[in-house]
Length: 66
Image: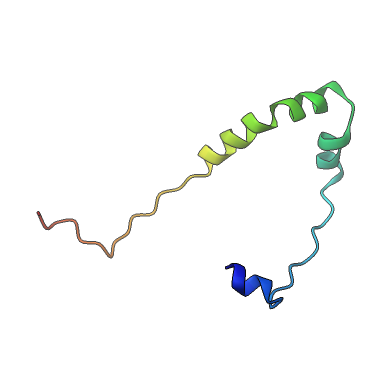
């Protein structure tokens, strides 16, 4: 990974500006925005566990007993 990217073969696009509402979450002084910044780690953990998905690997045959 490091050797491939360090050669300069990949140029990543610039990050687009977030929508205005998301910008306010990170720079706003509203109590709602401050609460979001205080609890953002909890939100991230929540979304991490919501987005986990399981895909069964059908290439492995588990019917054989050891």
